[in-house]
Amino acid sequence: MRHDPGMTLQPKLIVLALLTIASLSHAEPKKAAPAATKSGKPEEFVQKLYAEHAAMRGPMGGEKITEAGVAVWFSKGLTAQVWKDVQASKEEPGRLDFDVFYNSQDVQVSKLRVTDVKSDDFLASVTVTFRNYDKDESVRLNLRRIGGEKGEWRVCNIIYPEFDLLSHLVEPEEG
Image 1 (tube, one colour):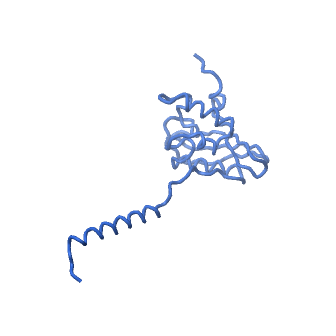
Image 2 (cartoon, one colour):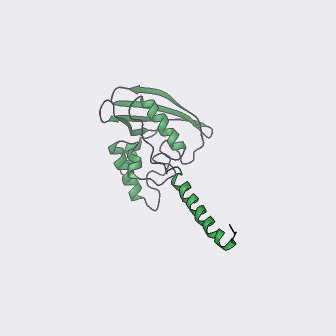
Image 3 (tube, helix red, strand yellow):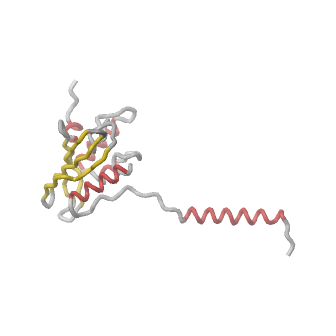
């Protein structure tokens, strides 16, 4: 068989294009919003929430905030209030001008631990302690199980030393 350089280039380009298309179709799909812990212990839910948040995949992480993304982790009522704040503050920070999981605008967290868990079948209170820069901090997450005894946990409020998230979102700002 004779070698014709003009005829060889075109089949090589077609093969290269087919290989590229094949590799793209086998590429890892874009990950959907993380699923919350379906059942189990409230501290497992909180640990997963903080891990997702630290990896910039949680409800208030680096990706665009969506109502569905917030609803994966927050109760219906808290989701509504968070989403209302997000929608109202398109151009400028709203009331959520801080990291809700660390009660800080600037975050450099270490030594994160779940230190205190109080729960029954449907409600839980989980305290998270951590070091932010050089200061020891703590927040308490109040959780509610939705969908019955085997349902998913959701954050229904976050309690900080001086205030709580739900009241912060609902109460009118004092002038």
